[in-house]
Amino acid sequence: QKEVEQNSGPLSVPEGAIASLNCTYSDRGSQSFFWYRQYSGKSPELIMFIYSNGDKEDGRFTAQLNKASQYVSLLIRDSQPSDSATYLCAVNSRARAQAGTALIFGKGTTLSVSS
Amino acid sequence: ETGVTQTPRHLVMGMTNKKSLKCEQHLGHNAMYWYKQSAKKPLELMFVYSLEERVENNSVPSRFSPECPNSSHLFLHLHTLQPEDSALYLCASSHPLYPVGTIYFGEGSWLTVV
Image (cartoon, rainbow over all chains, first blue to last red):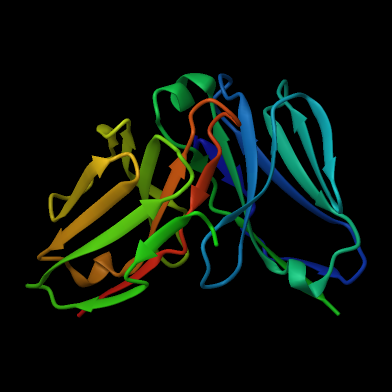
């Protein structure tokens, strides 16, 4: 089983709709969860991180975490064409972080928002 | 500005050449990373340095040789590469405590091996 799994997409949504991006992870010791956005030809940039079960909102973005189901999602409200990118899910644990080891990334989901 | 600077941004090298990629972080972090990103593949972690000590080496071929002289600088020395090594090489840095595990990427170095 892969450590972090994402549907590669593409996920296509019309402008103004809600885009829902999903991610599952295998390590139950994972404690921190991240969403990165990567535009074509660019490096990943951090959008949000979440530690606790439930929802975390930041502007049009909402991250949702369910540790029991080992599931994390990202909702993008009022999707804009500028949101078209690949969204990477990544997970870590405190043990890995304190050891200086790195995030494990999923393959990413490509989102396309049409105007 | 990302706080993590990579040079060169683009590099074309022959299979017999020796070149180096450089990374510098201005964020006061004490862990640095090299990732490789090939087309249609997930980010592959290559090397991790924590407090200038290599803590992870994910079965990377010896033609890639990292160097971390201090917590702000990281190099990736390249020699006798293969065309399949052509990819985007991303440097990143992090502080291990808060937010736990968050890493910040440089803009990457596009490498083409001919």
